Structure formats: structure tokens, C-alpha cells
Image (cartoon, rainbow, N blue to C red):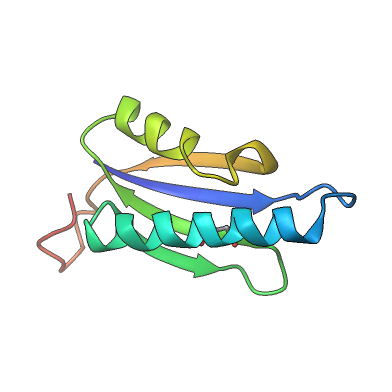
Length: 96
Ligand SMILES: O=C(O)CC1=CCC(=O)O1
């Protein structure tokens, strides 16, 4: 199942810079592992925002929820989810 997800990061202004750097490093490591595993298909920065558009390929809504909740930055993100299905005009056979 494919999901389009928007994540907007809102780190507290008074968060210690070392804590912020550590969270970002943990987030990056997990995001890159999930990309290698094929679960995090796309990751795009939204120009001009501390936010991203992502596409996840997971087995269920519960899997998406569990994945998002384990992100180190989860407590500091506003997350919007939209389920995707195949467009009849798509030429990409792996879209599903
Ligand atoms: O910077 C972001 O948009 C939040 C984030 C998601 C994966 C990652 O490495 O950072």
C-alpha cells in the first residue's frame, strides 16, 4: 500500500543544539535504512520549508502508523497522510 505523507518539523526553539543534532542524525539513519528496505520510496524536501513529502510502501495502515511513530523526530512533527491508489493512466507497472 502506498501513502503520501507530509511531515513538517517543529523543533522547540529552546531545544539544546546537541539534542537537535542527535535526533536529526538518528532520523537520517533510520530514514536511509527504510529507503534501502524499499519502505520509504521517496523523500523530498519541500523548498523553503523544514518539511518533506514522502511516499511510503507498507503492508497496512497499522504498519505505516508504527513506522511513523518510531521516527526519532515524531514528537516534533506535524504529519498528514493520504492513501494512494493506482491511476488508470499511469505507465508505471509497479504503482499499486
Ligand atoms: O528533515 C526532515 O524533513 C525530517 C526528516 C525525515 C527523514 C529525515 O532524515 O529527516
